Image (cartoon, rainbow, N blue to C red; front, side):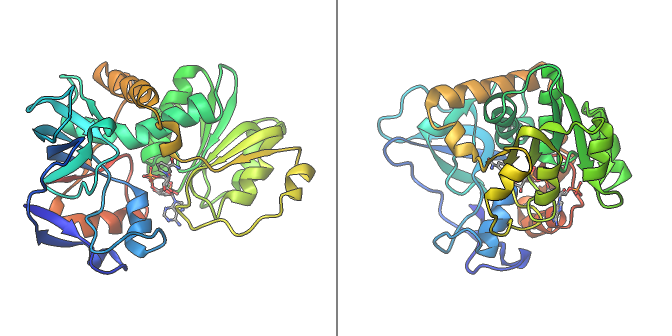
Length: 322
Ligand code: NDP
């Protein structure tokens, strides 16, 4: 089968097409025929070696497809089922293994592309808005990179709860997408100081929560945008990791809270995985969650997909087609 393999860490060029054997499902595992592969920022961290993995590595954890074969002891799935997962063991491939505990069924009206676009970023947006800082009507949130994969979904989910969403984006085109998704305002943080703008837009009050996936370049400003006792959910580092931070600053800035959440801890039980995936796939099926999937690349062009994601050229979801 065709698969992408990383033999050494480095730039996008280390994502090489390889001919690998189709894997055989072990106990508790399911073999899926992959139809759409979700590309996520975390694969850039693994590719660069910022996150450690054993090499050679077929990257990727997200995909949608069809059940091909069940390993010993697997119940609840059958060959031909439409499925998706964020726990795949190397999804940049034509076939991949996944623990049955990590697999969910996809409603008939949701395409593999939509499912692969909804799962990881959708469940991330879901846990941020419902569990990390459970938004309620009338709350105000600042969402950085509002036209990104997570950004567009988080903006839609927060808006449907009734929260006001202020976003930051790097271009006017991205601003339009964020506003379409339900944001009340889109600050061009490449041109204007987002801290000053956020304070102006909230009448000096500050926001209840900042959802910050950008990290290094936004962290300090994000803290300064919060109301007293507000919460910063730092969930990514698209611009680089945040340097060491003295916690005493949280006191001076208004008894603030910071958390560094990760999806895996919010889908740790089968019940939580089914709740979050059921919600996002259900909303996608009803057309209530709009998924942008115009950035689609052949599997062999995985390097180009990474290049474009890193260069801030993309909006919404990036997919690979096997
Ligand atoms: P995005 O589609 O949001 O892409 C990243 C965006 O970040 C860019 O489009 C860009 O938007 C913005 N950005 C700002 N500065 C930079 C920079 N220096 N280099 C690159 N991008 C920059 O990606 P995803 O939706 O896939 O993921 C967003 C972030 O969330 C990632 O950091 C990812 O690791 C994290 N994440 C965390 C999860 C968790 O559970 N903790 C789960 C899923 C994702 P603009 O051009 O508008 O500035």
